[in-house]
Length: 360
Image (cartoon, rainbow, N blue to C red; front, side):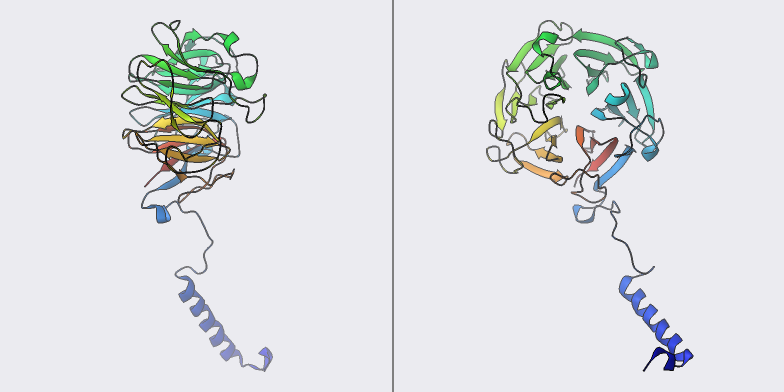
């Protein structure tokens, strides 16, 4: 029987019946596309990855809100007690501030204007702001090339010290690119050749905790950051020169191995002896003592418990380079920095965006 031989009224009835069956099968509203709705899925209520500000793919410089804002190769992050996120926006040569609602503003520097000038707000100049940390007083410290700069809450920039360039050599992979502050007035700085503890009040009295040379990962023309974070007891955790995670208690003069195996890179979760990392380019530590690392190349977020050293991967899909928001594990554009707020929420620089990660 052909369609033409079916009476018109019957054809209408058959069509209506088919539509009704389709609606029942698909639920209200008809067929749906697969989406990442950010509800956390199996990860639990409220968990997942979302964009706080910027666009992972599109770079630029725009002080706007949320995804309308623009960054240019953002790297290091720091979070204050009010939930404001500070960004070392390397490509724009500026330090940016993101309010909890995602509104972006300029704290210091001027987009596209390189220099070493101290001053307030856009009168200050930076040459290569790569890493940033915040101390107990709310002052920021920025690693700017081989210079450490201090920024107060009103955006006033001063120079703390200029690190000896001779110890770093001329290759970008040797340059300093990791910084953390403790509660005793010290800064910890990592480079491609050493890790230093620097008293802020007397920067010339530097203690070298390790020395050597980092194995090139991307080649000699690219900066190779190594993460560092300090817990409230003064123990510093360092992504060391052998690609493992080491630590130094307050006042120690050398690092002690903690997680991983010397010069054995990988992507394995597990206990302190079996876990492997590729490149922990940034580290942060929450109020419970848990460490989180941005693991480049793997492009994942790694969690390391203390004191045991058990490693898991709560966010990110190994080797994926596309930002996928929504339920965990999701995936990231190139990770460069990580920080944690007082509630345990993580923030990471992913491509040209800053993302928020809420874990179960």
